[in-house]
Image (cartoon, rainbow, N blue to C red; front, side, top):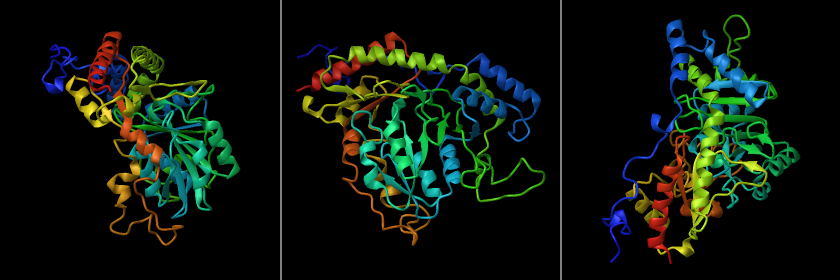
Length: 420
């Protein structure tokens, strides 16, 4: 018989973590305070809450351009809206194809489908779970228009070979940086390497405006469209009067969101340094745990830890990942099985069963599509394995050493009981 402290909480033992850890869901895990209040107060007192009349959105965009050293920064209503803005700018023909990772949020794929393009899933590198450059060219067809690269967990994809492939095949590159704010790839910030970078400021991100997003680029009008019109109903506001050049939604960010963003952008360095410090501490505490392998970061690159993600080694355990996750939750540790879950995106009902526009199956079954598209198990075997074996821990800038110690203790307790 083990002691009460050794007995798993799921089996009636005492949980390792008795009180909630800091979380991105509230002030316990977020750097939000007087600076944001002061900016929001200015907006409220001005009486102008709308982007088209105010100055805060423009100020937020200017600060973001200065930070990322880009010519254009366009604030929008969400990270999904940012990616959709990029797709509207690309202006694909119905049935054109966009290469995308199967390990990402559905917000990466929805904009592709809304522009009547086909998401073509490229398997991932097991080391960092980002799109594997070695798998890209086998998926390129005469209909391929773009590569959408997601930098998952705050870890950069291998951009040099991806850009070489894109240039060789004349493909547009959209960087999905929703989880990779201020992430560095060989001395460059992700989001500035491809043609367009897209960011999210949703509640969980490195800085937040509650919801919101940003599109950055150092080009414009490549496809006959101004980038700024692609989130604003195709409206050329630089001209007098009303006009609408093409079909586009309204994805305006409000002055209130931008006010928070102005204060938040000044806290990037604090937030990211704290996330890295806590992650390094957990790395060290788990170094001798044989069943755990943290998701990797490429050489000469800098992670920014949207999540702390690690893979379990099945050969070192007597149970599956789901059992470990449930045991960890019982110990008080908030965690999730895989990302975007225990299965990759293409096995979720919307894509697998092609639940898009009525019963049409568009754009998968559109007459303009190159073939009839099917999404099934085995399409991206490495991604499927990663989803089965990966556990993700929500991460934030308020985690201190005592919190990391508790996280490590919960992991060690559970994995020690279930080890082979």
